[in-house]
Length: 465
Image (cartoon, rainbow, N blue to C red; front, side):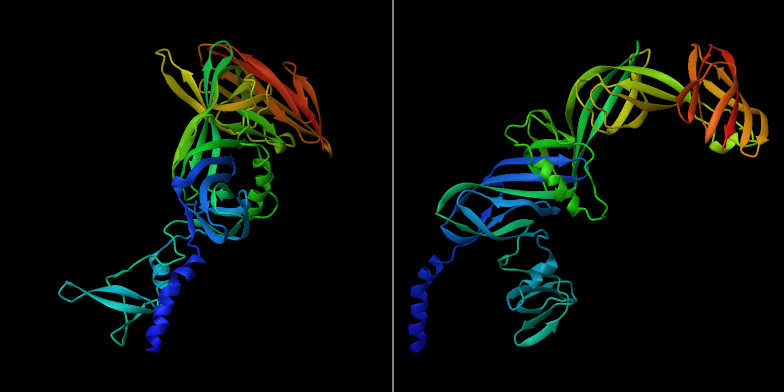
């Protein structure tokens, strides 16, 4: 009868024992109050996730779910009034069949076997091994094999269906309070996308969007989004995590509650989007970045320079005529800095429809600064270079003469900039029109070519190496 007395005593004491052991406090999506994302252009983002938690006094475990699979504890972790964090960790794997089976070692499960006739047979079994081919104990016998499927009675403690954050904490008193989890996640990035419509009179209409891409392995519903624009230092090492840690200081510098729509943040700029944005895993979303604005734009034709060795001796004439590059020279008169990103250039036809004229990568452009974009090759304008003379004047001195024939099949006159780059010391001895010295190694001739006509440019240059 002693075992009955011991059993009754254990049953009687079990409420008291349970009173000293608190169950895990799990904070799910419905506990979230605010979600703030500060996204950099290189694929790292700082997440501030505020939630309401009802805690007991003393030590306990707090679980926050779900998290993105690329989350990293590189920021402040968990903070809140009256709590201290003893330890914290991330369980980003979620559950899979192997982990679920391994967690049931020594426990009973239901095995479903498929018989030779195609029917199914069920039996209870104890999991002995989950490595490779599972091993079970059934009615005192040991069975190894791959069943049709396994049925589990419940999800074991410590396993979660989604990635989670876990912290062992101590609370000064019981009650409801707001806690904030700060972490860095990779796979969440943004970049500007520009649309430039070329107009008459040396103007262009510039529109800009922000493209947000979520490959982090998690969803971010109704988030307040801040975009960090710039070129952060990446360091010399290949590891991605230190880079995100360096970004963290810049990302956390401005309060999400007081940040304006744009502000300078060290060497970068920080943009705060007014409406909340929902970003689902695998989704790309575009939101307006800056309002449309007209800026100055001038189309220029440029003939690329010859290779440096063309000035040191005889050089074969190019078999086919070249088409000059069409370059768009713009100036940022938007009153806002323009982050680097892809730009698409459009022209409006006679019927009012837009046609894609080209695309290029726009650099970082400060307010009022000039920048250039390429429109591709000029269709109706061709250039043919012919070397007319080549002499070795001395051991280190060469003279070379060139003739450039520029033809314009279009209905309007054009101006073509013929550029040349020289190695060593150089001097233009003869030229059919005056050149401009761009820098210590470059000269340029701006040549007017009439409609349906041709212009010939000639020059002789002495090179000393």
